[in-house]
Length: 126
Image (cartoon, rainbow, N blue to C red; front, top):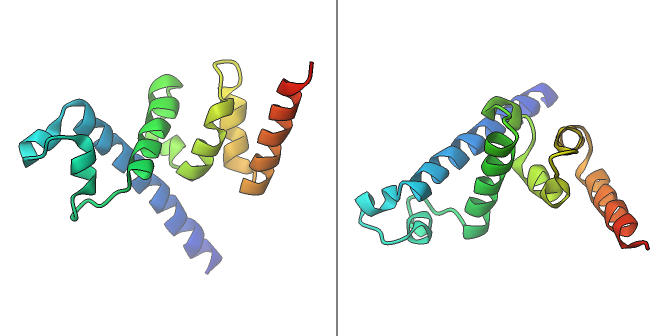
C-alpha cells in the first residue's frame, strides 16, 4: 500500500508540473482567446477546467522559479509536491536555490515551517 501511495504521489507531481507548463503556455500565448474567453482568469474558471486562481498562479510560480529560473527539469521538479516548493519560494535566492530545493524535497512540511520561522527570526535580528 505504501509503495502504491508513493507511486501515485509521484504521478501527481508530474501531472502538476505538466499542468503548470500548459497553464503558462495558455497565459503567455493567450490561447484562451481561441476558446472564446477574454482572460486567463476566465479560462481557469471555466467549469471544465475549474482551477482556483491561487492554485493556477502557484503552479505558474513553481514553473517560473524552478524550471525557468534555476533550470531544473520538469521531472526533477515533479519529485517535490508543488505546495512545498511554494512554501519555500520566499526563501529562494540564486545562492541557495539548490539547498532550498533539497530541503523541500527531503524535509516534512512542519520542518519547512520551522526553517522559515528560523530564517525570519535571524533576518529580524540586528
